[in-house]
Amino acid sequence: MSSEANSKSRKLSDEKMPTETEIKEFFSAFEKHEHKRFLEKYNYDITKDVPLEGRYEWISLKP
Image (cartoon, rainbow, N blue to C red; front, side):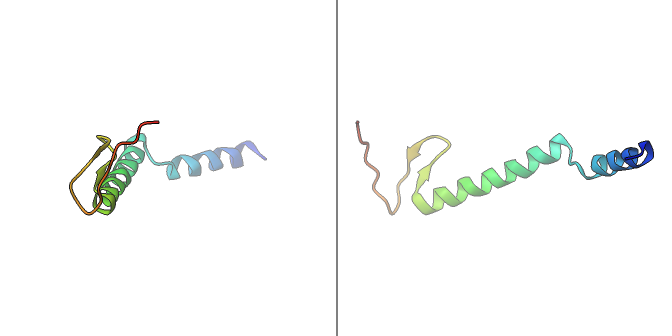
């Protein structure tokens, strides 16, 4: 591969690569969506690791 072609290839990949902020925003939005979906489906807060009032009754099991 010539130096010129290699340089063009790097420029294209740099242009397509999202910034760190964009990546964090993307995954943050996804995590918020999944948290809400799980909370509504199972009435359990996975962030705080606590059951919530709702359609399921959660009990603690001790090994």
